[in-house]
Length: 272
Image (cartoon, rainbow, N blue to C red; front, side):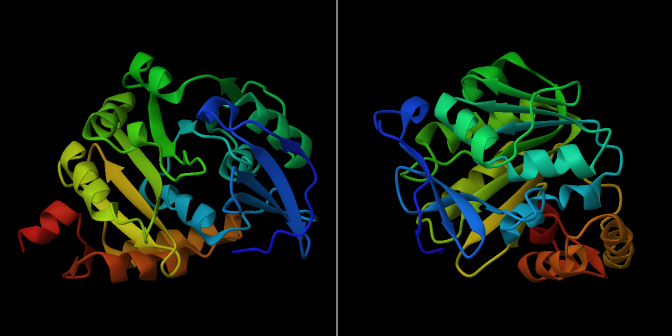
């Protein structure tokens, strides 16, 4: 965890997700966003504001390994906008919609984290993410959930009904991506719920010890999970992106079963 060194701006309220305390710190050239605690929600290297500073944010981009025709991406929770602004800058052709309930987070993200203004391919909406999901069915290729507050994942964002809704919001071949905390005592419960909602078509990937774990859920199983093919795809992506996709393939193989050189979804793995 980064040491909190310099507070740039504060908004003092702490009654709900919509008006929780938001502040920024800086240390060693990295600017970090905090929501009501010293826990870092987002981080940005000031000299390279569109790079993905934190490992888990680069891990989230592994959805590109499984689909090469993503057109729409919906994100619940803006934070400092790390993934959203990276996709906007480096994945041209993907239309991003980001729903954030706290107006102070949106203001901070734009003032301090180089989050761009809305345009035809980038739309930050102030609103309730749960309501937005319920009103948009079969609406997106990729759904990213990165909604934390000062207490961790809000209860409404880890229930069985919530994960069921996430599956319904995705298109028939859509990919669900969520950032979870590995040391959360309820991690196994959340993972089981995701597996139920996505009919066991799930992969997980640790990005730190015991830190963030990225979980992928698939409405439709990816067409090619051959490890050699994924490694080739990773190398091709590394030409376009400064992201260690090849290392993430290794992590996926470590955290999920591999059978006959094929990465197994968790439901398939249990049957072998």
